[in-house]
Image 1 (cartoon, helix red, strand yellow):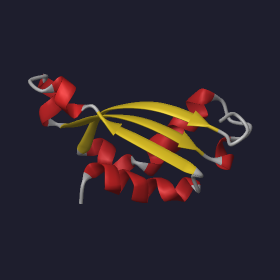
Image 2: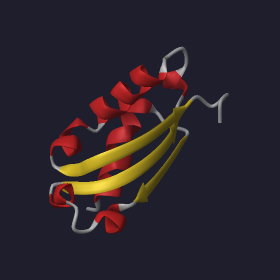
Image 3: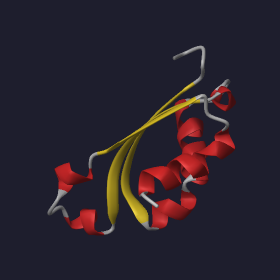
Image 4: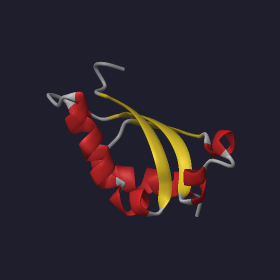
Length: 86
């Protein structure tokens, strides 16, 4: 299973209304960290982010993806919004 598919599955705990994942790994070929995992951009919309600051939202995403953050994801750029902000 591709990392992006694994990410989608793990992020279901946040009950997302929308998930967009872009794999930027090819742009970082040769970079030392690229051997440890891929580089991804994530845009996620969830009502669970309501009332949370950006740092709290990022922590929620990192917690959901914890198993991949150790092996599979080297770098992750996150945009986390509520449905009202989208």
